[in-house]
Figure (tube, each protein chain N blue to C red):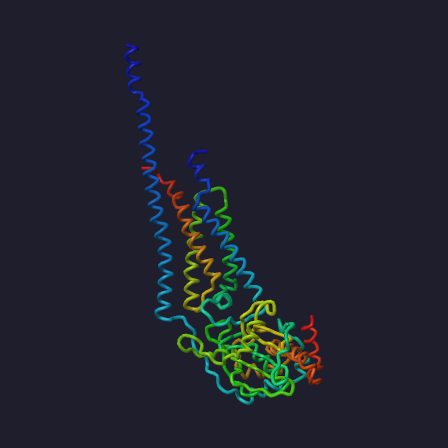
Length: 311
Length: 155
């Protein structure tokens, strides 16, 4: 009897072959589950990633097809009012002296390069564009500085791009500007206007071959920290600067006449920024003209700026 | 420790891809953040071109609530890197990684829209971060979705 029970128990115990079969079935099941999981993962992950890429693709197609989001035309340049030009070109020396460097954050950097001259005089080369907000800021200072050495005329009133940083900043345009001076010559090029044509700001002034060569070489490291930007200024091959030398935010929501009027008030943040930058330009120009004229170059404000240029 | 627990602790290929993507995006974000702050000294308009990082990174959309987008990206990828590098896996961490990668992709879509339709320029460095974020998103889904399923009862 006992032997019979033992035999029955042995007969219920799986054989090695049965154990192997069971193990193989379990392994096959695990593989099936793993494959199913992989398919599910592939479906979920692939679907999600493809969905994201498809959305980006749709955005690109809409952009290309409609041209939406392109630049918008700003206020067209008009000839500057004579009163405005008068205010910009006759900032009192006392104001400039009182301000010195003011709130200018950067200024022209000295470089070692062949002299940049035109008509036998040191050349002040300015490259900008009417839509450019940083050019909008810098032009006020350039105009104040140049006016200490000669007569700037033919400038226009315009404003920077409306959808860029520091939108619609009131400024002057040097396109069509003329300059007469016994000490230096001005080459001012506004590469593009603030008027959109075929989805782009319309080309305005073209650089000559020599000017292009100058910009290519000196509007690049190591002469400037970051190349290719505008505004770019080269003062007689002795100094270069790129970008705005002060925070354009001080001009926010100001009209042309408000800015021009503020230039003569040493307490004004606009004068502190614009006139301070102008003094730095004047000091750099004086270095190029051999400190001529003396009454301009020896002014205390200019001397203070010269110290910063050397520092 | 059960086999399942051991598997959860072991790194897998997708998780490694997610971690590498996060670290690479973090490196680019560091560069863009440094660029953002160093450029504030010398503002300049870029030469007009469609591929134009300066135009993108100095636009008014480069700052959200006073915080540079580049810095937000840096902080985001620091968080993702830490979460992905944690040696312990649990449901909370996995959910945080999944949610984070989802937020990252939504931010990518917003930024691509801004580049195309508001700034009208493309920054290649930013595009690099966008690509890495999408790769990280896919790798995170691949790596972490199954672990969330693991807790479901087996039928």
